[in-house]
Image 1 (spheres, rainbow, N blue to C red):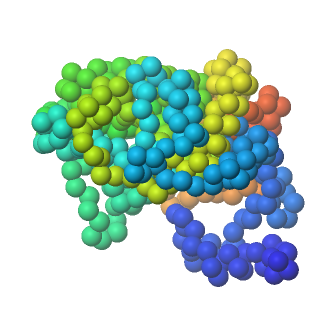
Image 2: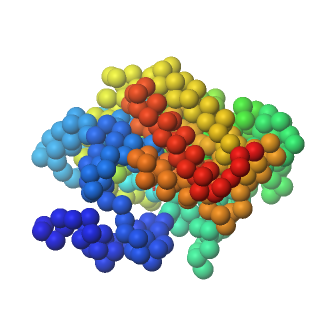
Image 3: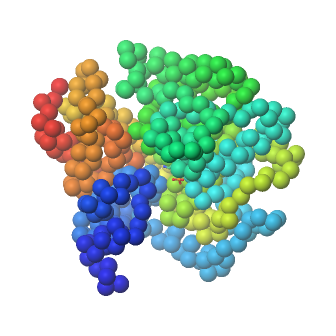
Length: 458
Ligand code: PMP
């Protein structure tokens, strides 16, 4: 491919033929895409040979780090043996059977059945259809409303984007956005006002339950939420939030859908975020860490009480994807779960690298630009702000988060900007030295952002 031997020619071809997700094409094409060519461990290499610490594990997914030959070998073996067969028409195959069995061992005890998909978005779509089917079978067909949260991200299909709480994703004309309500989010720094975090967490839980009571709990099929909101800015809820909310949902017979696409597979220091927060979901959405992103795959975990009804009297569930249980994706997931388990990676997040990085990360709160620095497991955020004491944000038009992100890229660190919140979610195999590198780079990047703003630091 002589055409593609320089960064410049790669960028030109990319601009000519590739439409990127969540991207303003004209702004990107004016500048040219960053081209990543290699990766190993927690580091990426770009087409100019720069080495970059990937503080985002790709898109929150590369839990085991880059370049693990075990996954490549498992996938290659599977592709040689059976590259594809479907799971429709009363058919199954060994990798999908093994993966279901393995997942039943690592998910909470009451989750033992799995429906496989190609991504997190279509896993959520599957749940929206399955939950409606469940309530119809249960003789409660009026339970059709899904309650979600403002600022939530649940995917980009029509249904998942409507359920998500990003207003700008609802803006395309004519999209069906029905039977969905958005509850407040437990974002204390931005919205907690004078309340303590604990009182604010309780207030948001109560307001959510009041919203449900207002439309009638008998009409609500389920409440969907990420244990920790990821793409919405890594909003770590106050400890009071989940116990109060989940007890109220149970009282009202509203099922909890725990979207574990980011929080699953060790990210929060437990296998699943619902375990970190002590909730008992009826549905779990999984993707990303399921295969560490090596091959696309998602899954839906279904509780015993739902699965028993559906398997005993649900009849045909008219839903499925060509790639439900794709053999090569299953092989990647099996090898990935094998690495997570044999190397004790989830426990290491809870007991070793998690607490180590959290300590250093929280110290970033001493920087003059940082209003709060939070982290649970290996998922964290720093809030950039104009005035720490007053919890006053920067003027949105300044684009401080983007400014900071650009400094991060230029200094060999990937952090993501959600407004003026800088978020990280590094591979779970991060070493102590790499954690030091991440925080040192983050501090330098904050200094550069402060200098560019000419901010006095309050
Ligand atoms: N749910 C959550 C919580 C997510 O973060 C994402 C993706 N970032 C999705 C669903 C959608 O997953 P996918 O991009 O694999 O469709």
